[in-house]
Length: 170
Image 1 (tube, one colour):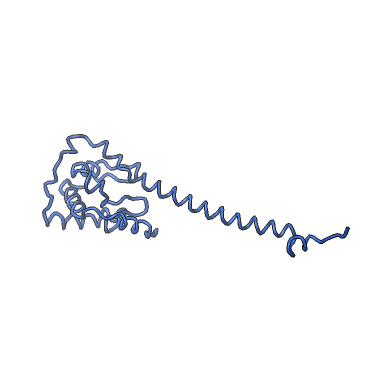
Image 2 (cartoon, rainbow, N blue to C red):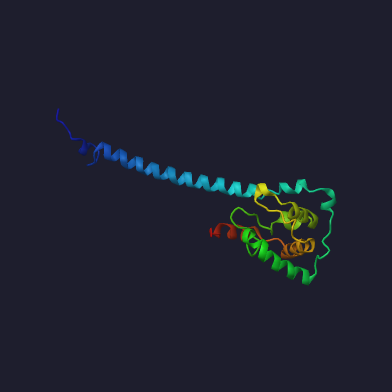
């Protein structure tokens, strides 16, 4: 019986080299799958941060409050300036959200939350979710911000997702 070199049996490559090539390919595929999985987890976490659980904490007397500046052009314009100064850093200049900060143009904020709910949130904040309290801000200013945010209306899901995914850290 004649001895056949391993190179001939494995198509010109040594057994160890062939194993390493397969291992590297599998390792690259595993890394890609891991990246995809981590991206999905990050997306779910971001969605959970904007879950609206704060709305359940709003007392009934706040829930029924009505914005005295709703629909007033001057108040909306003033609210836009206040928003740019105090809110846009986290929520974006278009209020579509930035990084882990939620969009203020979501259906939850625009359609489900009352003006009183948002007023309560501005007054109390939600520090666990990164929302500071604005209780030191004069009440009329808070109402103007709410008038401005509500005047924006809900954004399409595609616009909100595009803004979120294109956001780059400063």
